[in-house]
Length: 175
Image (cartoon, rainbow, N blue to C red):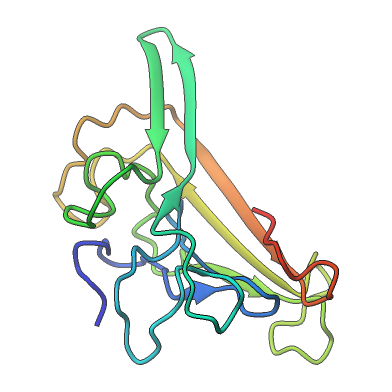
């Protein structure tokens, strides 16, 4: 069962992880990477396991940070923050990127491998993940829960990750 402190309601998509190369990295549709070592069922997915299958994890949780100067001063939107546990989790202070309340707002997967179930001629790598998220919400979508101290920059992020299984390219994931 997913830890409810790490999940937001509705369309959190945090069940995806790279598995074609030698790194297994969890990717979400709200700006975080890794799973915070939360135990999931039926598959306890990796946070950032390297080498794949070793049970050696290298990331607890990470996230995109974007900062800028506005007319109101310097602002920073954070996807994840330095924490020792996931109490509060996504949508809490310093977890400020969100997806929308649209049920179709999920990560899409595509692959350049013709035999793959996710084959697409638009794929860049053997396993692409594609997601969109924003920092414009001050409440967790679909709830009345306010994101503490969040002052949006007005960002809309289109994220793509790329992973390969070639021996010369299986030890990294491009974000």
